[in-house]
Image (cartoon, rainbow, N blue to C red; front, side, top):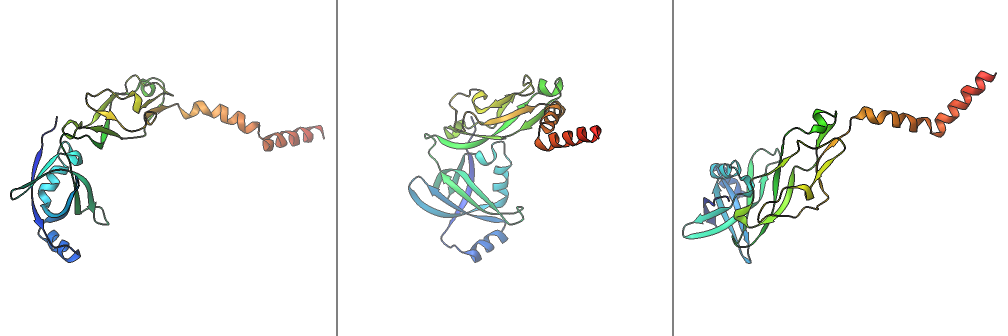
Length: 216
């Protein structure tokens, strides 16, 4: 179970490009707080503190308590907006949450082990979906979901339905969505492809022409 991170913020009543530009020059980030049927609030957070949250173990799935004077809000980061070069944070959206109500979030998948299909059968591991959507109480959001792939054979896959059970966590992504698979070695498919090519009309025509030439 994760801990709630306290993040100090300032409420603001002014908005606009000029105001936001001035805020960023002060090493701060303009923000908005919304949700839970309450009015939207304009806010400002310290850039350094926001980066600490994003680099923490839970990252964007961190549960935050925004503190502005005597006002407190339990929130999660809904969206972080970057500049056109995707380097600098320019805005952040905070979504109010109820710690007693489930939320839906994306959680990172961690693959553990080396598949037998790669190690002994010459297959190639393909990591198809690196995240899965789950539903649970905010404080029960897992840091990541570990999947043991050591017994995965060539030609087989692991789907959402195969992910480990986690108490209090429900998988929302479709059960048949593929997380990873071990593709069979390409060379094994080559003979079949060659046979199929030989059976094409163009190949048969070429063979007939060659036979006719020999008769002449």
